[in-house]
Length: 290
Length: 290
DNA sequence: ACGCATATATCATAAGCCTTGATGAATACT
DNA sequence: AGTATTCATCAAGGCTTATGATATATGCGT
Image (spheres, chains in turn brown, orange, red, purple):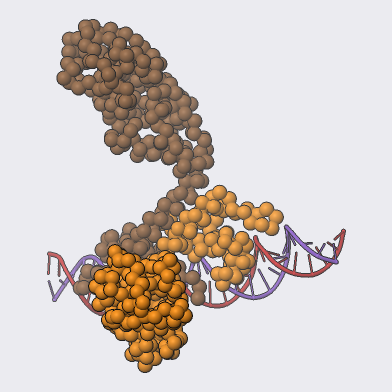
């Protein structure tokens, strides 16, 4: 006897019937003729020498064997689909350049790792720069994608995620509320962060001074943890050495910033599409680390 | 586009090629023609638009994609086979009577539970009796199966498992080595146990007396745990209230007994075959509880 | 180097399975 | 009642797939 092998096509039909509750609807969904689906169901029963369904009036009802096969079928199909898309993914090849502000680089490694697992044949290059510059490069097609903080001078792109900004100081420091308020600024969203901070302070009637600036958060870290300045960061970029300040600190509330994904104009390459999808999926959930 | 569905038949062929290392061998194993297997492999590659194998000289080598698909295939096929045999099992129906010595009854519940899970449509009845009687009933087709301790007056059957016999006393009792040695005997394998014990004692030059007898171990439990007698049990039937005696106790070593499965003569019913298989599988491992 | 044995790919053919479209019966809805 | 769905059945056609034979390649032994 040849090895007993289920026909996944028939199982898919079975599931469709169960999902839609009718043969005709299943046929529509699967792009088959109604008679095809009807016969497929019979074929399945014949192959198993088993009754999977009964009818009560017009409505279809699955027997306990049918239900049991359904649960097997769903598992089997899930595995099938996973296998299939995995094999397809391995055919996606090409090169791809993504631009991100420097400080995001250290925050996306899980996405990159996952992407490389899914699409091992894609050469991914990551380039850092300021948001404004990156957006220009995308427009010039020097980059396929850029994930930036949205700002006045570089609008557009698709908003991936909104994120609250917070005031922060060193974890062991008292809120440093001298007047003028000493600010530490760094560059990735520097223009946005600075603008936002200054507007908020001005509206609250506070004075301030720019105490330190740096290209990246890393450069500011010693200053801030030492308690010499207050910094503005997104909530997801808080580190254990930073302590966020709530409204009790007397500092004005900050608005949200928007993370936007820019795509090179006109027909993105397949790898770019996929990475874009992945970034959207992975960053959509606000709880997950950026 | 219609849903992408893998053909499990082709995957099975792929696995066979990988296992056997050659197309021809795979063909033999699957009972296909060599040309069929060759084309199946090509078909699979065509469907996925993917190269799965290369040849170096005569030997076949799978590409990394091939290897990856193989691992998917194995999982998929494992699920398939499980689903298939589950569906087949549900078609096994009928009634079935198994005979066992009373004291084994409490030791097989996991087997019965598993059996009922696999073959829910089979009505299983269990009957208790002495080994000798059960064997007679199997011969008379009053029972489908009987699991008994093999003994001189009821030979035959298939040996499922060999098991050591041990001397035991109450867990808190000193080895009771008075002369004559007080024995507690119970019935399921009573004749065997008694015979074995007496032979061993005689060979060792020890005298003994039968202090207590009962139909089951349950009846003897109070006597033995009270330290009034020594009992002979199989190692797997030791309970927390029994303490086995090793050779340092001075009692002679005991031989092994054999658990044998008797089947009704001529063509066993399908349910009987299955239960027999299951018992063999479940009891074969000596470490598992009887 | 040659030939034999084995393994594999290719091809035409035939079988058989699967989809299709049509038809009729049964059931709900108006 | 009449109408509209839904479904099972059927014959027909198409397409897929297994087969057996054949051609080609590879490896091994002489």
